[in-house]
Amino acid sequence: MRILHTGDWHIGKLVHGLHMTEDQEYILKELIELLKIEKVDVLIIAGDVYDRSIPPTEAVELLDDVLSKVVLDLGIKVIMISGNHDSPDRLDFGSKLLRDRGLHIMGKLQKRIEPVILEDEYGEVHFYPIPFSEPAVVKALHHKEEVTNHDMAMKTVLAPITNELDQNIRNICISHAFVVGTEEPETSESERPLSIGGSEYVSAEYYHPFDYVALGHLHRPQRVSKGSIRYAGSLLKYSFSEAKQKKSVTLIELMEKGKITIDHRVLKPRRDLRVIEGELEDLMNREVYSFGNREDYIHAILTDKGTLYEPMQRLRSVYPNMLQLERVRMDLSGSDGDQVVDMKGKNPTELFLEFYQKVTGEEKPTKEALEYFSEIYEELEREERDA
Ligand SMILES: [Mn+2]
Image (cartoon, rainbow, N blue to C red; front, side):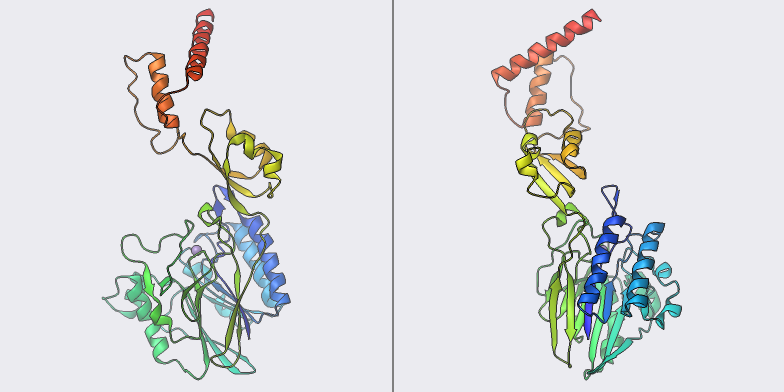
C-alpha cells in the first residue's frame, strides 16, 4: 500500500496580507499529478486543512475541487483530521455521507476512535485518525480531571487505542500535535502555539506502538524520533522563518508487517518565498536579480546606511511580489518608533547629530555629510522665508 502523508495545507491563508489561495491551487495541482505518477492508494492530510475556523469561500471551493478529483476521479482514499486551525464541527460536515465514497474526515474528537480499515495483498491496515485534541475537550469527554495539558490529553486519547492494538496487523496513526522525541524539534513562525502558558508538548512514546505516525503541526518536514514518527511539513512556506526550509511530502510504502519504506517528494511552488540582503542598488542590479525568479515572494534586508528614497516602491519595480522590507540599521517605524525625543533647546545641527547616531549607530557623520546637511537646511529655511 502506498500512502502519501501531507499536512498543514492551511488553505485560505494570508501571508503578509496576501491571499495564498492561487499558490495553493497551483501546488495542489502538482500534488494531484504526483498521486497519479506514484500510484498512491491513500492520501493523508494531518490537520490544519484550512487556515481558519471560518475559511473564505475560495478556500472551501478549492478543497472541494481537490478532494473531488482525488476521491472521485482518481479513486484514491483520503483520510483527514482537524488541526488547531480548523473548526472541528465545520470540517465534519457531510463526513458520514462521504465515508462510503472513500473520504474519511475526523473533525471532532470522539471518545472512542474507530479505525479506518483498508486492505491490500498483505492484509488489513488500520488507520487511527486523531483530531486535534484540546486538553479541556479531552478532560470533559473522558471525565478526567487530571487532564490539564497536551501531554496528558494525548495520553488519555491514545491509551484505549494502543492498549487494544492488534500487533499482528499494520497500524497507522494520524495526529495533530507538538510531539517531542529524541530529535530537536524545529519550529516555524507560521505555527500557532497550541497552548498559551501551559506546555504544548506531547511525548513521542505514546505513539510507539504504531507502525507509522503521520503528524501535522510543525511546518518543517522532520523526524520526531527514530522509527516512523514524522511531520510531513506544510504544503508551502508560510512565513519568512521558513525561507530556507525544503518542503516535501512523505511517501510511504507499506509491505508486510514490519516492512516499510519512507521517501520524500518535492513539489515546486508557483513562487518561492525568500530573503534577499544587500544594498538597494545591488539588489536592483540585473546581474543580481536575474539569479532568481523576480516573481518570488521577497523579504528584503537593506544594508544601506543613509536615507533612501522610497525603497519599497523601487524594489517593487524589480520584485513585484515584495512582501517585507527591513533596514539593518535604520528603523524609524519599528518598535522604538514611539520614543519621545526631547527637542527643546536644541539647534537643528544637534538634532541632526542625534538622529544620525540613532539611525546609523555611528558616532558622527563625516564632515562632508554634515556640510551637506547644513546646506540643505539653509536652503529649506530660505524657501520657507520666501514662500
Ligand atoms: Mn499548521
